[in-house]
Length: 320
Image 1 (cartoon, helix red, strand yellow):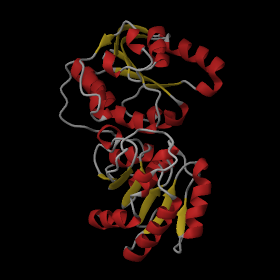
Image 2 (cartoon, one colour):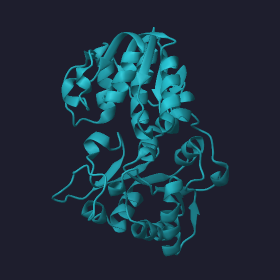
Image 3 (cartoon, one colour):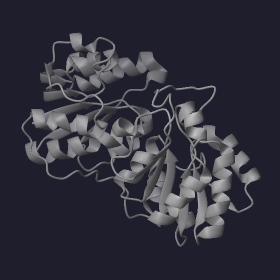
């Protein structure tokens, strides 16, 4: 059996899809191909349950689109899963040579993608955790699953610069600006960790977070190991895997910590942790009248501002 997974989302979306892929691979003895975006390609390409990863890069739309369609049409698939539920993913599913095309029910589809003539999974709670929603595709195929596993590549390997250190990771970035915690709060938390534990402070993020990282270092009194923009995806896995705890806003490395079974404290404001929060881990979210609003930007992010470093430190001391 040959299966095509269409999931072009960010790192967190991809990580939440791994349990479905693992179950399909094991129970159907399937050959798994996965259409994925460039940022998540390395972790998908190295995953033990994925036989082939195919990149679609929207930054080079013309060239990439033609090449992607050519690649997905090279194979005749028994099943094509559209897990993205948008117009683009639906068009890719239609372009693929598939005997069965399976997508979400109408209620959970976006951009009128429910109009595509796909087999639809049963209607269920749209506010359920996304991992659970993806696993509904396994249920649709009558695959029994008792255990959730991620089997992230590169587990058990050490990041050379931190090989012998006890450290806490502060993941300071987030794709949506409204999900970010302030640099002032991260700086205060860094000093608390330095004073109250024997752990070093490591901050992670992308190249776009370097300015925030510098502000944190300028405001903090303690020494901080700054890895923003300096790690590959493989190295980020190594850093997170060996951390004593990860403290993160709602973003991909938060889900990575869950999948690696690293202790996690997730800071939530505008988004709903029931749906996009960590599958396992501690969540801090303060109740305010406007949350969850799911906004990408906010002029007055009181939901995140109401999370104080003292609240996070209290939870950290409990989990360490």
